[in-house]
Length: 202
Image (tube, rainbow, N blue to C red; front, side, top):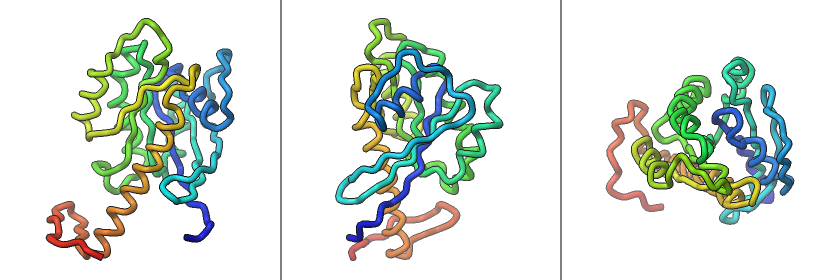
């Protein structure tokens, strides 16, 4: 394997105040600032890691959740390899809005195959005592909307933050691998009517 690092662009999406910036900062700098302000527009940080023997540079883009920043954030969706749809477990409205965020991302990101795009769902702020969204509710949403991986995180307590971002990388690598197999097996079909090839051996 060459030492060349694979650059992956990951977008954090969700309502304002669900803790997207805190998650990004906890993951990249291992710091938590309870006084952090709302993001204006878009900002990003990089982190290098190794997943399953692959060296990866994760470029994490944190976007403003407020509606008035929509025109600032949407151009940055293009070229994304994974999207972390984030809500706060103590805010049911942010959970209900996940579908809108997913639609917005698909619309502006120019993803060729939305059904197989790697989304990961994060229920943040599990350190809060008062929950409005149950784990079962979140799992049910993930299953209904595309069988997405779901993680309950806390940027404050550093719960599952590393695991969630690593899973995002694994999702991207898995999709990439499937694509390579499809091309190798010559079973690619641009209209999505692909029939599983009986043997995909190397």
